[in-house]
Image (cartoon, rainbow over all chains, first blue to last red; front, side, top):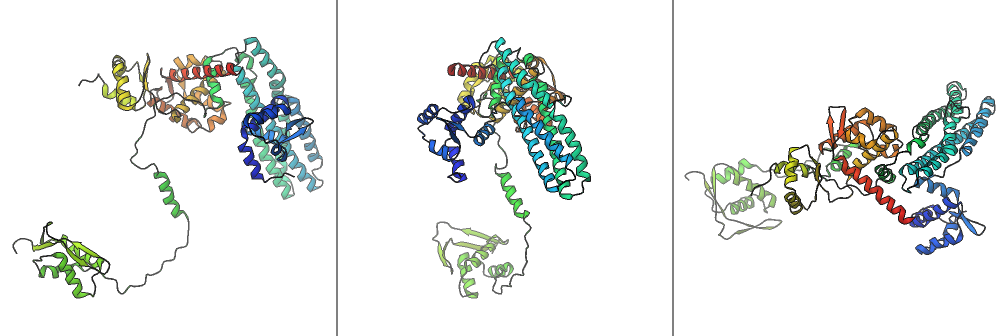
Length: 398
Length: 177
Protein backbone atom coordinates (compact mmCIF):
# COMPACT_ATOMS: atom_id res chain seq x y z
CA UNK A 1 0.00 0.00 0.00
CA UNK A 2 1.36 3.42 -0.95
CA UNK A 3 0.99 6.10 1.70
CA UNK A 4 0.02 8.92 -0.62
CA UNK A 5 -2.54 10.12 -3.11
CA UNK A 6 -1.60 9.46 -6.77
CA UNK A 7 -1.62 13.21 -7.45
CA UNK A 8 0.78 13.79 -4.55
CA UNK A 9 3.21 11.29 -6.08
CA UNK A 10 2.96 12.89 -9.53
CA UNK A 11 3.55 16.34 -8.00
CA UNK A 12 6.51 14.93 -6.13
CA UNK A 13 7.97 13.58 -9.39
CA UNK A 14 7.57 17.00 -11.00
CA UNK A 15 8.95 18.97 -8.04
CA UNK A 16 12.03 16.80 -7.52
CA UNK A 17 12.56 15.86 -11.17
CA UNK A 18 16.22 16.95 -11.28
CA UNK A 19 17.23 14.85 -8.30
CA UNK A 20 15.21 11.91 -9.61
CA UNK A 21 16.88 12.19 -13.01
CA UNK A 22 20.30 12.02 -11.31
CA UNK A 23 19.20 8.95 -9.36
CA UNK A 24 17.85 7.39 -12.57
CA UNK A 25 21.21 8.04 -14.28
CA UNK A 26 23.03 6.27 -11.42
CA UNK A 27 20.73 3.26 -11.70
CA UNK A 28 21.22 3.21 -15.48
CA UNK A 29 24.99 3.35 -15.20
CA UNK A 30 25.64 1.05 -12.26
CA UNK A 31 22.51 -1.09 -11.97
CA UNK A 32 22.08 0.10 -8.37
CA UNK A 33 22.36 3.29 -6.30
CA UNK A 34 25.14 3.53 -3.72
CA UNK A 35 23.91 5.18 -0.54
CA UNK A 36 26.86 7.64 -0.49
CA UNK A 37 26.05 8.80 -4.01
CA UNK A 38 22.39 9.13 -3.15
CA UNK A 39 23.29 11.24 -0.13
CA UNK A 40 25.54 13.40 -2.32
CA UNK A 41 22.60 14.11 -4.66
CA UNK A 42 20.42 15.14 -1.70
CA UNK A 43 23.17 17.34 -0.24
CA UNK A 44 23.92 19.01 -3.61
CA UNK A 45 20.36 20.21 -3.98
CA UNK A 46 19.53 20.38 -0.31
CA UNK A 47 16.55 18.13 -0.97
CA UNK A 48 16.28 15.41 1.64
CA UNK A 49 13.64 13.19 0.15
CA UNK A 50 14.82 9.68 1.00
CA UNK A 51 11.77 8.84 3.12
CA UNK A 52 9.34 9.97 0.39
CA UNK A 53 11.27 7.99 -2.23
CA UNK A 54 10.80 4.86 -0.15
CA UNK A 55 7.20 5.64 0.91
CA UNK A 56 6.11 6.33 -2.68
CA UNK A 57 7.86 3.10 -3.77
CA UNK A 58 10.14 4.90 -6.23
CA UNK A 59 13.30 3.28 -4.86
CA UNK A 60 13.80 0.32 -2.53
CA UNK A 61 16.54 -0.74 -0.18
CA UNK A 62 18.95 -3.34 -1.45
CA UNK A 63 21.35 -4.31 1.36
CA UNK A 64 23.05 -1.05 2.30
CA UNK A 65 22.28 0.51 -1.07
CA UNK A 66 19.16 1.24 -3.11
CA UNK A 67 17.64 0.51 -6.48
CA UNK A 68 15.15 2.31 -8.70
CA UNK A 69 11.93 0.34 -8.94
CA UNK A 70 11.20 -1.02 -12.38
CA UNK A 71 7.89 0.79 -12.89
CA UNK A 72 9.49 4.21 -12.36
CA UNK A 73 12.62 3.21 -14.25
CA UNK A 74 10.51 2.38 -17.28
CA UNK A 75 8.57 5.65 -16.89
CA UNK A 76 11.83 7.62 -16.91
CA UNK A 77 13.16 5.64 -19.87
CA UNK A 78 9.97 6.41 -21.72
CA UNK A 79 9.78 10.14 -21.01
CA UNK A 80 13.48 10.62 -21.70
CA UNK A 81 13.40 8.35 -24.76
CA UNK A 82 16.53 6.68 -23.36
CA UNK A 83 16.22 2.93 -23.29
CA UNK A 84 18.69 0.40 -22.04
CA UNK A 85 19.60 -1.96 -24.85
CA UNK A 86 18.15 -5.43 -24.45
CA UNK A 87 20.32 -8.26 -25.61
CA UNK A 88 18.64 -9.93 -28.55
CA UNK A 89 18.59 -13.20 -26.60
CA UNK A 90 16.32 -11.41 -24.11
CA UNK A 91 14.01 -10.45 -26.94
CA UNK A 92 14.25 -13.98 -28.30
CA UNK A 93 12.32 -15.23 -25.25
CA UNK A 94 9.17 -13.84 -26.85
CA UNK A 95 9.53 -16.40 -29.62
CA UNK A 96 8.97 -19.15 -27.07
CA UNK A 97 6.12 -17.48 -25.20
CA UNK A 98 4.35 -16.41 -28.40
CA UNK A 99 4.93 -19.87 -29.95
CA UNK A 100 3.56 -21.69 -26.89
CA UNK A 101 0.45 -19.52 -26.65
CA UNK A 102 -0.24 -19.88 -30.37
CA UNK A 103 0.10 -23.69 -30.18
CA UNK A 104 -2.30 -23.78 -27.22
CA UNK A 105 -4.82 -21.61 -29.09
CA UNK A 106 -4.63 -23.85 -32.14
CA UNK A 107 -4.85 -27.09 -30.17
CA UNK A 108 -7.62 -25.86 -27.89
CA UNK A 109 -9.66 -24.08 -30.53
CA UNK A 110 -12.69 -26.27 -29.81
CA UNK A 111 -12.08 -26.38 -26.05
CA UNK A 112 -13.21 -24.10 -23.24
CA UNK A 113 -14.21 -20.72 -24.68
CA UNK A 114 -13.22 -18.77 -21.58
CA UNK A 115 -9.69 -20.15 -21.62
CA UNK A 116 -9.43 -19.59 -25.38
CA UNK A 117 -10.43 -15.95 -24.91
CA UNK A 118 -7.86 -15.56 -22.13
CA UNK A 119 -5.14 -17.11 -24.33
CA UNK A 120 -5.94 -14.70 -27.18
CA UNK A 121 -5.63 -11.82 -24.72
CA UNK A 122 -2.33 -13.11 -23.40
CA UNK A 123 -0.99 -13.60 -26.93
CA UNK A 124 -1.99 -10.01 -27.68
CA UNK A 125 -0.04 -8.88 -24.61
CA UNK A 126 3.08 -10.89 -25.49
CA UNK A 127 3.16 -9.64 -29.08
CA UNK A 128 2.74 -6.07 -27.81
CA UNK A 129 5.62 -6.47 -25.35
CA UNK A 130 7.78 -7.99 -28.08
CA UNK A 131 7.05 -5.18 -30.52
CA UNK A 132 7.75 -2.54 -27.85
CA UNK A 133 11.02 -4.23 -26.90
CA UNK A 134 12.12 -4.18 -30.56
CA UNK A 135 11.15 -0.52 -30.91
CA UNK A 136 12.99 0.49 -27.74
CA UNK A 137 16.09 -1.39 -28.86
CA UNK A 138 16.02 0.26 -32.28
CA UNK A 139 15.70 3.71 -30.64
CA UNK A 140 18.66 2.93 -28.39
CA UNK A 141 20.74 1.48 -31.23
CA UNK A 142 20.00 4.51 -33.40
CA UNK A 143 21.11 6.80 -30.58
CA UNK A 144 24.33 4.80 -30.09
CA UNK A 145 25.18 4.73 -33.78
CA UNK A 146 24.42 8.44 -34.24
CA UNK A 147 26.71 9.07 -31.29
CA UNK A 148 29.46 7.19 -33.11
CA UNK A 149 28.79 9.08 -36.32
CA UNK A 150 28.72 12.43 -34.52
CA UNK A 151 31.84 11.49 -32.52
CA UNK A 152 31.75 14.41 -30.11
CA UNK A 153 34.04 12.34 -27.86
CA UNK A 154 36.67 12.47 -30.63
CA UNK A 155 37.37 8.73 -30.65
CA UNK A 156 39.99 7.65 -33.15
CA UNK A 157 38.91 5.61 -36.15
CA UNK A 158 40.14 2.31 -34.69
CA UNK A 159 38.14 2.84 -31.52
CA UNK A 160 35.08 3.84 -33.53
CA UNK A 161 35.31 0.64 -35.58
CA UNK A 162 35.74 -1.43 -32.41
CA UNK A 163 32.61 0.12 -30.91
CA UNK A 164 30.65 -0.21 -34.14
CA UNK A 165 31.64 -3.88 -34.46
CA UNK A 166 30.48 -4.46 -30.89
CA UNK A 167 27.03 -3.01 -31.60
CA UNK A 168 26.76 -4.83 -34.90
CA UNK A 169 27.86 -8.25 -33.60
CA UNK A 170 25.95 -8.32 -30.34
CA UNK A 171 22.89 -6.23 -31.03
CA UNK A 172 22.23 -5.18 -34.59
CA UNK A 173 22.79 -8.44 -36.52
CA UNK A 174 20.94 -10.66 -34.01
CA UNK A 175 18.04 -8.18 -33.89
CA UNK A 176 17.97 -8.19 -37.65
CA UNK A 177 17.77 -11.99 -37.59
CA UNK A 178 14.78 -11.77 -35.26
CA UNK A 179 13.03 -9.39 -37.64
CA UNK A 180 14.16 -10.81 -40.97
CA UNK A 181 11.21 -12.71 -42.34
CA UNK A 182 13.49 -14.93 -44.45
CA UNK A 183 15.52 -15.99 -41.43
CA UNK A 184 14.70 -19.24 -39.62
CA UNK A 185 15.00 -17.63 -36.14
CA UNK A 186 12.71 -14.81 -37.10
CA UNK A 187 9.79 -14.00 -34.81
CA UNK A 188 8.29 -11.96 -37.60
CA UNK A 189 7.93 -15.19 -39.52
CA UNK A 190 5.97 -16.69 -36.64
CA UNK A 191 3.76 -13.60 -36.39
CA UNK A 192 3.03 -13.94 -40.07
CA UNK A 193 1.77 -17.52 -39.53
CA UNK A 194 -0.34 -16.39 -36.56
CA UNK A 195 -1.79 -13.56 -38.59
CA UNK A 196 -2.88 -16.01 -41.34
CA UNK A 197 -4.50 -18.31 -38.82
CA UNK A 198 -6.29 -15.47 -37.00
CA UNK A 199 -7.50 -14.10 -40.33
CA UNK A 200 -9.38 -17.32 -41.05
CA UNK A 201 -10.79 -17.60 -37.52
CA UNK A 202 -12.08 -14.02 -37.47
CA UNK A 203 -14.26 -14.92 -40.45
CA UNK A 204 -15.52 -18.38 -39.59
CA UNK A 205 -15.46 -18.88 -35.83
CA UNK A 206 -18.92 -19.79 -34.56
CA UNK A 207 -18.83 -17.93 -31.21
CA UNK A 208 -19.43 -14.22 -31.82
CA UNK A 209 -17.48 -12.92 -28.82
CA UNK A 210 -14.41 -14.91 -29.79
CA UNK A 211 -14.84 -14.01 -33.44
CA UNK A 212 -14.65 -10.34 -32.40
CA UNK A 213 -11.56 -11.08 -30.32
CA UNK A 214 -9.92 -12.72 -33.35
CA UNK A 215 -10.91 -9.69 -35.41
CA UNK A 216 -9.25 -7.36 -32.89
CA UNK A 217 -6.16 -9.56 -32.79
CA UNK A 218 -5.96 -9.57 -36.58
CA UNK A 219 -6.07 -5.77 -36.84
CA UNK A 220 -3.41 -5.55 -34.14
CA UNK A 221 -1.17 -8.08 -35.91
CA UNK A 222 -1.42 -6.28 -39.24
CA UNK A 223 -0.35 -3.05 -37.56
CA UNK A 224 2.43 -4.78 -35.62
CA UNK A 225 3.76 -6.35 -38.82
CA UNK A 226 3.88 -2.88 -40.41
CA UNK A 227 5.73 -1.48 -37.39
CA UNK A 228 8.21 -4.35 -37.39
CA UNK A 229 8.80 -3.90 -41.11
CA UNK A 230 9.70 -0.28 -40.43
CA UNK A 231 12.14 -1.31 -37.69
CA UNK A 232 13.68 -3.93 -40.00
CA UNK A 233 14.12 -1.27 -42.69
CA UNK A 234 15.92 1.01 -40.22
CA UNK A 235 18.21 -1.83 -39.27
CA UNK A 236 19.16 -2.69 -42.84
CA UNK A 237 19.43 0.88 -44.12
CA UNK A 238 20.98 2.64 -41.18
CA UNK A 239 22.42 0.30 -38.59
CA UNK A 240 23.94 -2.64 -40.45
CA UNK A 241 26.07 -0.39 -42.74
CA UNK A 242 27.47 1.33 -39.63
CA UNK A 243 31.14 0.48 -40.28
CA UNK A 244 30.86 1.92 -43.75
CA UNK A 245 29.09 5.02 -42.43
CA UNK A 246 31.62 5.92 -39.73
CA UNK A 247 34.45 6.08 -42.27
CA UNK A 248 33.60 9.67 -43.05
CA UNK A 249 33.35 12.35 -40.43
CA UNK A 250 32.36 15.98 -40.70
CA UNK A 251 32.09 18.72 -38.14
CA UNK A 252 28.94 19.91 -39.92
CA UNK A 253 27.26 16.53 -39.61
CA UNK A 254 28.32 16.36 -35.97
CA UNK A 255 26.59 19.71 -35.50
CA UNK A 256 23.39 18.53 -37.16
CA UNK A 257 23.28 15.24 -35.23
CA UNK A 258 23.76 17.10 -31.95
CA UNK A 259 21.16 19.71 -33.00
CA UNK A 260 18.62 16.98 -33.83
CA UNK A 261 18.94 15.54 -30.31
CA UNK A 262 16.99 18.52 -28.94
CA UNK A 263 16.07 20.85 -31.82
CA UNK A 264 13.51 22.78 -29.81
CA UNK A 265 16.00 23.75 -27.13
CA UNK A 266 18.94 24.60 -29.36
CA UNK A 267 20.02 28.15 -30.30
CA UNK A 268 19.34 29.18 -33.90
CA UNK A 269 20.84 31.30 -36.67
CA UNK A 270 19.23 34.74 -36.47
CA UNK A 271 17.66 35.02 -39.87
CA UNK A 272 15.31 37.93 -40.22
CA UNK A 273 11.75 37.65 -38.98
CA UNK A 274 9.33 39.60 -41.14
CA UNK A 275 6.66 41.42 -39.18
CA UNK A 276 3.45 41.04 -41.10
CA UNK A 277 0.59 43.46 -40.77
CA UNK A 278 -2.73 41.79 -41.37
CA UNK A 279 -5.81 43.78 -42.32
CA UNK A 280 -7.74 41.73 -39.79
CA UNK A 281 -7.19 41.12 -36.10
CA UNK A 282 -4.98 38.29 -34.86
CA UNK A 283 -7.95 37.07 -32.87
CA UNK A 284 -10.06 36.82 -36.00
CA UNK A 285 -9.87 33.04 -36.07
CA UNK A 286 -10.99 32.68 -32.46
CA UNK A 287 -13.72 35.27 -32.84
CA UNK A 288 -15.05 33.55 -35.94
CA UNK A 289 -14.87 30.18 -34.20
CA UNK A 290 -16.80 31.47 -31.21
CA UNK A 291 -19.37 33.00 -33.53
CA UNK A 292 -19.84 29.77 -35.48
CA UNK A 293 -19.99 27.71 -32.30
CA UNK A 294 -22.96 29.70 -31.13
CA UNK A 295 -24.90 28.22 -34.01
CA UNK A 296 -23.40 24.78 -33.63
CA UNK A 297 -25.74 23.90 -30.77
CA UNK A 298 -29.08 22.72 -31.95
CA UNK A 299 -31.28 24.14 -29.23
CA UNK A 300 -35.03 24.21 -29.39
CA UNK A 301 -36.17 27.73 -30.03
CA UNK A 302 -39.74 28.75 -29.16
CA UNK A 303 -41.07 31.83 -30.82
CA UNK A 304 -43.72 33.77 -29.00
CA UNK A 305 -45.68 36.73 -30.22
CA UNK A 306 -44.60 39.73 -28.21
CA UNK A 307 -47.43 41.23 -26.20
CA UNK A 308 -48.76 44.20 -28.01
CA UNK A 309 -47.70 47.19 -26.05
CA UNK A 310 -50.52 49.61 -26.10
CA UNK A 311 -48.58 52.59 -24.82
CA UNK A 312 -45.70 52.39 -27.28
CA UNK A 313 -45.16 55.81 -28.77
CA UNK A 314 -44.45 56.01 -32.46
CA UNK A 315 -42.94 59.20 -33.80
CA UNK A 316 -45.08 60.59 -36.52
CA UNK A 317 -42.61 62.77 -38.32
CA UNK A 318 -45.03 64.16 -40.92
CA UNK A 319 -47.46 65.32 -38.27
CA UNK A 320 -44.82 67.18 -36.23
CA UNK A 321 -43.16 68.59 -39.33
CA UNK A 322 -46.50 70.03 -40.35
CA UNK A 323 -46.92 71.55 -36.89
CA UNK A 324 -43.45 73.05 -36.96
CA UNK A 325 -43.84 74.52 -40.45
CA UNK A 326 -47.09 76.18 -39.40
CA UNK A 327 -45.35 77.98 -36.54
CA UNK A 328 -42.23 79.17 -38.37
CA UNK A 329 -40.18 81.18 -37.71
CA UNK A 330 -39.17 79.69 -34.34
CA UNK A 331 -36.91 81.59 -31.99
CA UNK A 332 -35.85 78.47 -30.13
CA UNK A 333 -36.39 75.03 -31.61
CA UNK A 334 -36.00 73.12 -28.35
CA UNK A 335 -38.38 75.40 -26.47
CA UNK A 336 -40.92 74.71 -29.19
CA UNK A 337 -40.30 70.96 -28.82
CA UNK A 338 -40.83 71.24 -25.07
CA UNK A 339 -44.00 73.23 -25.40
CA UNK A 340 -45.42 70.96 -28.09
CA UNK A 341 -44.79 67.83 -26.09
CA UNK A 342 -46.13 69.40 -22.90
CA UNK A 343 -49.32 70.40 -24.65
CA UNK A 344 -49.88 66.82 -25.75
CA UNK A 345 -48.55 64.81 -22.79
CA UNK A 346 -48.24 65.51 -19.10
CA UNK A 347 -44.47 65.13 -19.00
CA UNK A 348 -41.72 65.61 -21.49
CA UNK A 349 -40.09 62.22 -22.20
CA UNK A 350 -36.42 62.38 -23.22
CA UNK A 351 -36.99 59.84 -26.01
CA UNK A 352 -39.75 61.93 -27.49
CA UNK A 353 -37.66 65.06 -27.33
CA UNK A 354 -34.79 63.38 -29.10
CA UNK A 355 -37.15 61.95 -31.71
CA UNK A 356 -38.32 65.49 -32.46
CA UNK A 357 -34.74 66.64 -33.09
CA UNK A 358 -34.92 64.61 -36.32
CA UNK A 359 -37.00 67.51 -37.66
CA UNK A 360 -33.85 69.62 -37.79
CA UNK A 361 -32.69 67.58 -40.77
CA UNK A 362 -35.84 68.05 -42.81
CA UNK A 363 -35.87 70.01 -46.04
CA UNK A 364 -37.51 73.36 -46.33
CA UNK A 365 -36.05 75.02 -43.25
CA UNK A 366 -32.92 76.98 -42.49
CA UNK A 367 -31.17 76.83 -39.15
CA UNK A 368 -29.30 79.51 -37.29
CA UNK A 369 -27.36 78.93 -34.11
CA UNK A 370 -25.71 81.54 -32.02
CA UNK A 371 -23.29 79.61 -29.85
CA UNK A 372 -22.60 82.69 -27.69
CA UNK A 373 -26.19 82.92 -26.54
CA UNK A 374 -27.06 81.44 -23.23
CA UNK A 375 -28.40 77.91 -23.37
CA UNK A 376 -31.90 77.13 -22.24
CA UNK A 377 -32.90 74.38 -19.88
CA UNK A 378 -35.50 71.75 -20.67
CA UNK A 379 -36.66 69.49 -17.93
CA UNK A 380 -37.70 66.01 -19.05
CA UNK A 381 -39.04 63.32 -16.76
CA UNK A 382 -35.57 61.70 -16.66
CA UNK A 383 -33.12 64.60 -16.79
CA UNK A 384 -32.49 68.28 -17.31
CA UNK A 385 -31.01 69.14 -20.70
CA UNK A 386 -29.00 72.25 -21.49
CA UNK A 387 -29.73 72.98 -25.11
CA UNK A 388 -28.58 75.72 -27.49
CA UNK A 389 -31.05 78.21 -28.90
CA UNK A 390 -31.66 77.15 -32.47
CA UNK A 391 -33.52 79.60 -34.64
CA UNK A 392 -35.54 78.14 -37.48
CA UNK A 393 -36.78 79.96 -40.55
CA UNK A 394 -38.53 78.80 -43.62
CA UNK A 395 -35.96 78.15 -46.30
CA UNK A 396 -35.85 80.98 -48.82
CA UNK A 397 -37.85 84.16 -48.24
CA UNK A 398 -40.14 83.93 -45.26
CA UNK B 1 20.63 63.71 -50.33
CA UNK B 2 21.77 60.99 -52.72
CA UNK B 3 21.18 57.35 -52.01
CA UNK B 4 23.10 54.39 -53.46
CA UNK B 5 21.84 52.73 -56.61
CA UNK B 6 18.90 50.28 -56.06
CA UNK B 7 18.48 51.68 -52.54
CA UNK B 8 14.73 51.09 -52.43
CA UNK B 9 15.00 47.49 -53.69
CA UNK B 10 17.86 46.73 -51.31
CA UNK B 11 15.90 47.96 -48.30
CA UNK B 12 12.72 46.23 -49.45
CA UNK B 13 14.45 42.91 -50.02
CA UNK B 14 16.38 42.90 -46.78
CA UNK B 15 13.38 44.05 -44.72
CA UNK B 16 11.35 41.32 -46.45
CA UNK B 17 13.76 38.77 -44.96
CA UNK B 18 15.51 38.06 -48.25
CA UNK B 19 19.12 37.22 -48.77
CA UNK B 20 20.71 39.42 -51.44
CA UNK B 21 23.01 37.18 -53.47
CA UNK B 22 26.20 38.06 -55.32
CA UNK B 23 24.51 37.09 -58.59
CA UNK B 24 22.03 39.93 -58.08
CA UNK B 25 23.08 43.34 -59.45
CA UNK B 26 21.84 44.96 -56.21
CA UNK B 27 24.61 43.13 -54.38
CA UNK B 28 27.32 45.33 -55.94
CA UNK B 29 25.64 48.46 -54.70
CA UNK B 30 25.12 46.87 -51.26
CA UNK B 31 28.75 45.79 -51.08
CA UNK B 32 30.13 49.10 -52.39
CA UNK B 33 28.10 50.99 -49.82
CA UNK B 34 28.57 48.48 -47.00
CA UNK B 35 29.50 51.09 -44.40
CA UNK B 36 26.44 53.18 -45.26
CA UNK B 37 24.05 50.23 -45.12
CA UNK B 38 25.45 48.85 -41.86
CA UNK B 39 24.85 52.28 -40.32
CA UNK B 40 21.55 52.76 -42.11
CA UNK B 41 19.97 49.56 -40.77
CA UNK B 42 21.43 50.04 -37.31
CA UNK B 43 20.29 53.65 -36.98
CA UNK B 44 16.91 53.29 -38.71
CA UNK B 45 15.71 49.96 -37.31
CA UNK B 46 18.32 48.68 -34.86
CA UNK B 47 19.16 45.69 -37.11
CA UNK B 48 22.60 44.26 -37.79
CA UNK B 49 23.56 43.77 -41.42
CA UNK B 50 25.58 40.65 -42.16
CA UNK B 51 27.58 41.01 -45.35
CA UNK B 52 29.63 38.08 -46.68
CA UNK B 53 31.50 37.67 -49.96
CA UNK B 54 28.56 36.12 -51.75
CA UNK B 55 25.43 37.14 -49.84
CA UNK B 56 24.05 39.68 -47.43
CA UNK B 57 21.09 39.66 -45.01
CA UNK B 58 19.91 41.34 -41.85
CA UNK B 59 19.78 39.59 -38.49
CA UNK B 60 16.69 39.12 -36.40
CA UNK B 61 16.42 40.30 -32.80
CA UNK B 62 14.70 37.05 -32.03
CA UNK B 63 16.64 33.95 -31.14
CA UNK B 64 13.79 31.45 -31.30
CA UNK B 65 12.44 32.15 -34.74
CA UNK B 66 10.28 29.32 -36.07
CA UNK B 67 11.33 29.65 -39.72
CA UNK B 68 14.99 29.52 -38.76
CA UNK B 69 14.35 26.37 -36.71
CA UNK B 70 12.45 24.71 -39.54
CA UNK B 71 15.22 25.51 -42.03
CA UNK B 72 17.81 24.04 -39.65
CA UNK B 73 15.70 20.90 -39.26
CA UNK B 74 15.39 20.62 -43.03
CA UNK B 75 19.13 20.98 -43.57
CA UNK B 76 20.00 18.69 -40.65
CA UNK B 77 17.81 15.82 -41.84
CA UNK B 78 18.77 16.28 -45.49
CA UNK B 79 22.52 16.26 -44.70
CA UNK B 80 22.11 13.20 -42.48
CA UNK B 81 20.17 11.30 -45.13
CA UNK B 82 22.54 12.30 -47.95
CA UNK B 83 25.46 11.04 -45.90
CA UNK B 84 23.58 7.81 -45.13
CA UNK B 85 23.04 7.44 -48.86
CA UNK B 86 26.82 7.48 -49.29
CA UNK B 87 26.89 10.98 -50.80
CA UNK B 88 29.20 13.87 -49.97
CA UNK B 89 26.40 15.99 -48.52
CA UNK B 90 28.28 19.28 -48.68
CA UNK B 91 29.07 18.89 -52.37
CA UNK B 92 25.48 17.93 -53.05
CA UNK B 93 24.15 21.02 -51.29
CA UNK B 94 26.66 23.26 -53.02
CA UNK B 95 26.30 21.97 -56.55
CA UNK B 96 23.49 19.49 -57.01
CA UNK B 97 19.99 19.99 -58.21
CA UNK B 98 17.38 18.21 -56.07
CA UNK B 99 14.17 16.62 -57.21
CA UNK B 100 11.20 16.94 -54.90
CA UNK B 101 10.56 13.22 -55.29
CA UNK B 102 14.03 12.35 -54.06
CA UNK B 103 13.60 14.69 -51.08
CA UNK B 104 10.30 12.92 -50.31
CA UNK B 105 12.09 9.56 -50.42
CA UNK B 106 14.73 10.77 -47.96
CA UNK B 107 12.21 12.26 -45.54
CA UNK B 108 9.74 9.40 -45.71
CA UNK B 109 12.41 6.79 -44.95
CA UNK B 110 14.25 8.83 -42.35
CA UNK B 111 14.81 7.49 -38.84
CA UNK B 112 13.97 11.03 -37.66
CA UNK B 113 10.30 10.30 -38.39
CA UNK B 114 9.18 11.64 -34.98
CA UNK B 115 10.66 15.07 -35.65
CA UNK B 116 9.42 15.14 -39.25
CA UNK B 117 5.84 14.17 -38.45
CA UNK B 118 5.68 16.72 -35.64
CA UNK B 119 6.73 19.59 -37.87
CA UNK B 120 4.06 21.28 -39.95
CA UNK B 121 6.50 22.40 -42.64
CA UNK B 122 8.16 19.03 -43.11
CA UNK B 123 5.49 16.44 -42.42
CA UNK B 124 4.27 15.77 -45.96
CA UNK B 125 5.41 16.09 -49.54
CA UNK B 126 3.01 18.95 -50.08
CA UNK B 127 4.09 20.86 -46.98
CA UNK B 128 7.76 20.38 -47.94
CA UNK B 129 7.07 21.84 -51.41
CA UNK B 130 5.43 24.87 -49.77
CA UNK B 131 8.37 25.17 -47.44
CA UNK B 132 10.86 25.09 -50.33
CA UNK B 133 8.78 27.85 -51.98
CA UNK B 134 9.09 29.87 -48.74
CA UNK B 135 12.86 29.38 -48.82
CA UNK B 136 12.89 30.46 -52.48
CA UNK B 137 11.13 33.70 -51.57
CA UNK B 138 14.00 34.33 -49.17
CA UNK B 139 16.61 33.36 -51.79
CA UNK B 140 17.82 30.36 -49.82
CA UNK B 141 16.73 27.97 -52.55
CA UNK B 142 16.23 28.52 -56.24
CA UNK B 143 13.35 26.75 -57.94
CA UNK B 144 14.17 25.19 -61.27
CA UNK B 145 10.73 24.47 -62.68
CA UNK B 146 8.06 22.74 -60.62
CA UNK B 147 9.97 19.60 -59.75
CA UNK B 148 13.52 20.67 -59.02
CA UNK B 149 15.41 23.15 -56.88
CA UNK B 150 18.95 23.93 -55.79
CA UNK B 151 20.46 25.82 -52.88
CA UNK B 152 21.89 29.33 -53.17
CA UNK B 153 25.07 30.37 -51.30
CA UNK B 154 22.77 31.36 -48.40
CA UNK B 155 23.03 27.67 -47.34
CA UNK B 156 26.37 28.67 -45.76
CA UNK B 157 24.59 30.47 -42.91
CA UNK B 158 23.10 27.15 -41.80
CA UNK B 159 26.13 24.99 -42.48
CA UNK B 160 28.32 27.43 -40.52
CA UNK B 161 25.75 27.32 -37.73
CA UNK B 162 26.02 23.50 -37.62
CA UNK B 163 29.82 23.64 -37.48
CA UNK B 164 29.72 26.20 -34.64
CA UNK B 165 27.12 24.13 -32.82
CA UNK B 166 29.40 21.07 -33.07
CA UNK B 167 32.40 23.04 -31.82
CA UNK B 168 30.34 24.17 -28.83
CA UNK B 169 29.35 20.58 -28.08
CA UNK B 170 32.93 19.29 -28.42
CA UNK B 171 34.14 22.05 -26.07
CA UNK B 172 31.35 21.16 -23.61
CA UNK B 173 32.38 17.51 -23.76
CA UNK B 174 36.04 18.40 -23.16
CA UNK B 175 35.13 20.55 -20.18
CA UNK B 176 33.05 17.75 -18.69
CA UNK B 177 35.70 15.16 -19.47
